[in-house]
Length: 321
Image 1 (cartoon, rainbow, N blue to C red):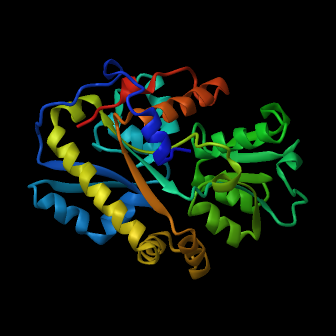
Image 2: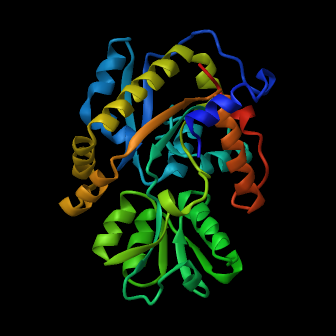
């Protein structure tokens, strides 16, 4: 886990040659097209309206593209040209897309605490811990939070991937599959995992915030390399507006979770559970040397376990504006 002490100790550890230089301020458009989903930072920014006001003061118009069920289709929209930014999703599918040849770059990172992705099972399943998953089926999203958490959990409890059946499903398909008993477990993030926990009388057998030894995945703001370099001032303004939104969320947790509840259409009990996390946002610039050291460690971990299809030097794929 990255701490202030870690940041101080590792500052400057990565050479400037490993990073893309800051670009001169430029703008080729007055409109930014932002991906969004049913939760998280972009949803709150979209619903509150203050984000758009702050960019309007800089003569930047905002268009919201979505909603996306997870990060992969958000990234496809960026690569395909229908969006300029993804929706602050998982770094893992972004790395997978880059390895596949997509011209994507990271321009900012966010760590929200506590992390609440979890592996859940039904309380009457007879599964009381990760070790009991042997021979069972688990739904995950490919190359995303669900998959890496499952692999970490299996490894920590002495099981291999071959000991279980991994079923790749998008969240919209995984929820009914879990509810109908077509899979024995589901590895999923907030709020879907919290909704399923209540709806299907489920329980955690592995919780990211307490059971994962170190962070393997982060939230990231992703765009294309050309867009970042050709629209540096617009990208910087977008990042700053998101930072302000993240600070508001950290200071107004109950109100933020109530806004998210309106979009997610879940119960007050789920909302109150999420409020109880008291989630806080911490942002990191794309060229933060200490952060990139931790990010590289995570990428190597994912590559070693074949969650990512190859090795990648993350510092080659960041742009600081």
